[in-house]
Amino acid sequence: MRRLLLCLAIGLANCEPNNDEILKKIEEDPVNAFLVHPFGKPKLAFQLERNDRLPRHVVVHSYDIRIEPFFDYLGFEYDKSLRDTFNGETKIVFSVLQPTTQIVLASSVDLQAISLTLGRQRIKVLDYETKANSLLVLRTAEELAPRKNYTLNFKYSSRMQRAVYGGVFTADYRNPEGNWTALLATQFETISARKAFPCFDDPWFKSVFHISLIHPRNAKVYSNEQIAEQRYFDEQRLLTRFKPSPKMSTYLVAFAIGDFEEVEAYSKSGVLNRAISVRGRKPFLRNGALTGAAVVDAMEGLVNVSYPLKKLDHLDSVALLGAMENWGLIIYGGTVYERLGKNMAELVLDRRIICHETAHQWFGNLVTADRWGWEFIHESFATFFETKALLDPDFMYLAEIAQVPLIRNAVEGYSKARHPIVDDVGRFDRITYAIGGALLTSVRHALGDNFYKGLHIFLTENKYGSAGLDTLIESFIKVRKAFSGVAR
Image 1 (cartoon, rainbow, N blue to C red):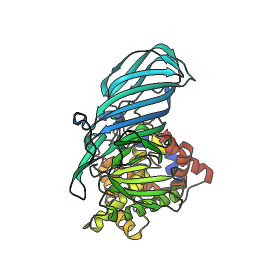
Image 2: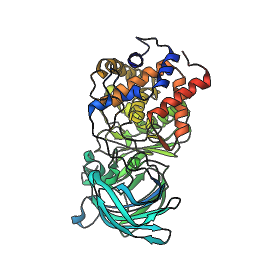
Image 3: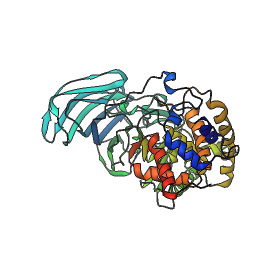
Image 4: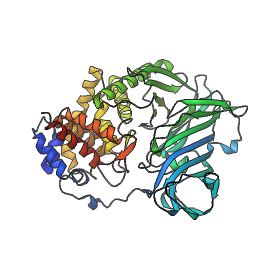
């Protein structure tokens, strides 16, 4: 196993492994190759605290979420005692897999009212309590039965956060006229959706989301899906309702409100890509939209799986550190627009980030790791596609040069790494991103075109669901069996 992982990490430049032997060894013990340190240090030796995972005897069917925020959007008059707060209403339709009188979900909001119904019948909630890690435990007076759809109803309020803390956040800035205003956006990965609405905040739970926002009339609004309808809410505000989202995890829910402008571009497959930023930057958005559209085409070609939504937005929040791959609404912190003075290295990095976040629409969004700690399936693949989805040969060349030291460091550094690539808790660091991406680059060279065929199987067989590393490995094994050998 040591030799196997070393070969994968070094790549074909320094090693010529037998491809059948690689797949045979992976097939014998696929998960251990990643869960155990390649030099023999067991996972348990790290003694890491586990992320909270919710009981999985519940199936969540849909969320209906309405958010009413109060923030300093220019011209919006409101009670200043409510500044940077929001009111919310959430309905969750779910069923149980076994009889129970207890439901466990997550919430970090100030709950004002809770009710549970079965059709028109009201079911008494005896009590509820918030435990460690913001877990919300509800106890019912009567036993909930399988094969019935129940609805949890919540009314609540909460405070907005700084972007760095996750949740719903605002960012103040000066508009082109020099006046202060603010925008609102979200950052829910990994477990910050609970700061915006009570939910089953665990990536294993997937559901359809119906999002509605109450916002200033002249503000533009975005969410995972396109707008379904808008109507007047009061003299100052509109109520915007969005189309139902695809089936997805809570951390991928996103919305934004602000004085935005946009530039559009379409992929060859007809997907609308919009580069969005605060007003005054429109002349610098064109390449962001074009890059987004081109990357959608590239990803569809590489994995042979169509992007399932009709639009993909790339929104600059002016506040977020890095970027977040929300399905249909990627939120960045300065990548989308091309300010004057950016050098070639910065432009290459911007395009790599767009490639990275767009790749997540397949790896992480369409198929999601079934728990935190398995984000190798998200981040390592997104890092791998940073260069593979770059179609401009000049940019691709520069980006691939940047990966050479990563592959070298994968060999030199992984033996001394603080944790394995796949772990018991979420790890968003150089090991998961850079070393994981370098490992996949080597696997791609070892397996040839069967690498992409395996990814196609993985994505199509698990779409709109969750999966683990064993499922990914099984997809490569299926390719081996189907094609009676691997490409050399």
